Amino acid sequence: MATPTILTTPRTLTLSSEEAVVRKISVDAAQEIDRDRPEDDPLVLRFTGGWARDKLLGLQSADLDVGIQNMTGYDFATRLSEHISANTAKYGTKLGSVNKIGSNPKKSKHLETARVGFLSALKTKISRERVGMEIDGMFKGCNAHASLSLIHEVDLYNEIFAPPIQDLPVLPVHDMKIAANIVRHRLFGSTSPHPRISELLTTTSEKYLVWLIAAMSPRKNQPLYLAYNKNMPAAATAIKEGLRCPNNVSGTIAKVFANWKVIQNMVINLEHWGRGKTALEMRALDTDWKNQVGACLMFELMDLKENANDDDEVEERVMDKYETFLKTIAEEGLEEAPNFKCLLTVSSPPLLSSHNSGVVANSWGYQGNDVAAEYALTSGAWMKPTIERSLQHQLDNLHKGKDELLQWVRGNRQALLDGLEYVGVSVGEGKKTR
Image 1 (cartoon, rainbow, N blue to C red):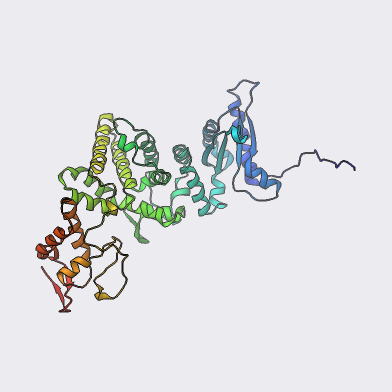
Image 2 (tube, rainbow, N blue to C red):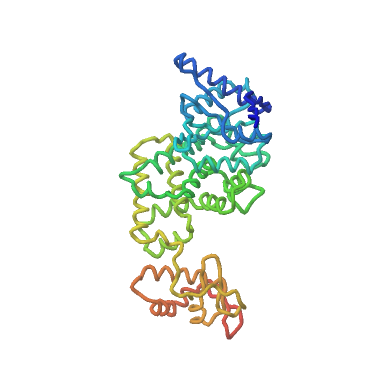
């Protein structure tokens, strides 16, 4: 049998105009770097990964991985950013993002890789969904701080984080870099004497969200709502429309920017509150309260720096204040407060039945059967504040059971219903007490 002929001639690949720009910028930057290196140790760059595969298959690729020999990906990305910043007019483009993929000898990946994106592609070639995916990857990776720093350095904030609308407000974009440094050094870098702060945001989701919040921090003093969207804080609108983030992410961002001043008040006044009131305040924040508290700490430290107060002692006092807050929440057993339920409920799922069923289901999970029956009233809006105050009493008196709580509700009917509208079961007429 004849031996098959093996083609050994390298295949020639034709670069697109965007890829040619990437190649030229990368080579120019490498030549500049080589001036500071020994002649016998030149920098070697290679286009690698999925781009090479797609190119050989004749497919388009939005990613372009550059493998670097004799230099770490992060160091090269930093020098590349500096080179582009000094030659923007020459290339007509700006660096979009940089992310490092570490070497992995177990998978035969001995070269560290720097992932780069360019503003020209960002503006014209890549959808908002794609930008959101890239930001998602960067913020869930190991170089979120470096990514935000580079986005700030090459002036890409509006291209990435602004909603696609005309007449964008002028924002203090430098706040993003300040916030990123605070996240890195204070929220994640603080251990002793602030162990609870360092352990506040530990899950992948929590860490991802805090970097998004840092990216949105220039909007912390912006009017809360944009003129064309009155139902969502401006920062959440930017996240949802600018990066196409899902509702649960934009929802957390909305709560952060709506609640951070409320949380500042909580931190200050906690020592004067009982356990029940504190629990209700925590419950109102919802289950993502940790990201909200972390953001509030971030914003308070940012205010110090914006007011030219870089006194380490003052910053330490702020850190101590939040450490004490978190310690109190833990010691009072209130970390799960958003999931607390009043004893005056039923264990079965909410019933979505007739108006006179005596059961109401709402976002708080309240079912006021016991109170409605005791007061002989139909279900209605009066139930939520009544059950809240009952829950507060319950949490301030942990030694009391359901019967004693119901007795307290019975004895405080007038105070609990004062100012609320309600309808009696037998009378069927509306009544409002003053």
